[in-house]
Image (tube, rainbow, N blue to C red; front, side, top):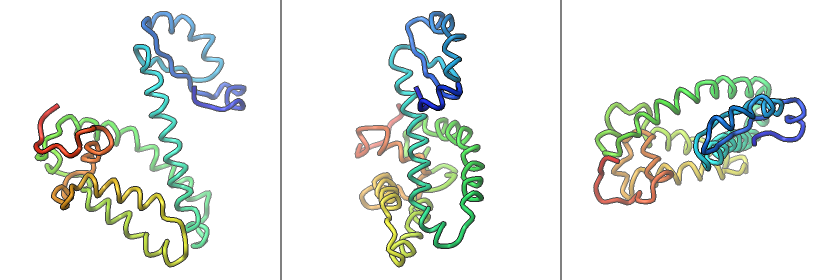
Length: 186
């Protein structure tokens, strides 16, 4: 379940259901909708996976906001305007995730380098470019360092994959065999 007590009382939560029988879940759905939106996720265990994915997105968004908040405040940015900009960007996330998922169907290195949307090196430069500002102003840089660490790992020990699409991050975050010697289709 995703949502605190106040959200439950307003009927604004999100309930992820899984069962060996989708019909059993559908039969309870009118009652469960009093808690908020219900989503049937599939067999037992699927609801936990969907819940983690959804809640992680909220947490990652909060950590990104907190990581940049000191800079926003220092520069006198309108925080409400920044939140609206974040919301607009988040609206594009479902399409981006779907497109990325399609791209990640092949783990062949040639697939990662074919028409990259944004390369690992581009993303690394994006994250690294703020470090001097953060350091100059004594701001924590945990998130940029974490992102750079992931991007470097996906780029390979000698940076041999730095020109690959950012979806190559799946080799670090999704698969245990990130250091595989040769690429192969799943």
